[in-house]
Image 1: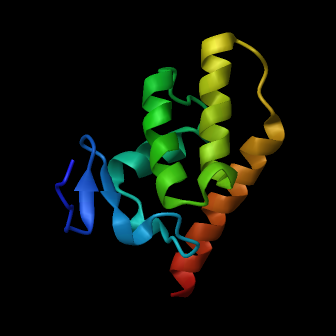
Image 2: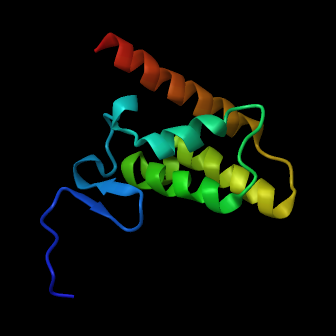
Amino acid sequence: MSHQQTESDVSIDEIPVDLELVHSTDLSRADVPDKIESITWSLLSEQPPENPLVVLIAARWWYIHGAGESDPVYCWAIEWARHLTTGEATASGLFGECRQYLHSLERDDNDR
């Protein structure tokens, strides 16, 4: 493992990891790749994804690029994946925090 990664945008799979945004506190909606944005907003829709692996793709991106384990989108995605795999009720407060956070990203983008 002596290989040094020099690019600022690497990928483990088809979802890019932007090294300049790792655990960023200044994310904007424009920083979110299209596929992740689509999954993320569908988590707030009337028909959220039913495949936990799809949900975990978004969770991983938000964990890496957001505030880690305290990122609201990461927390809701993990909670939704847990619900899908166990059938247990979800913590609805996490849904509200996620929605509020995503809407704040939209407002920040409009203010820029």
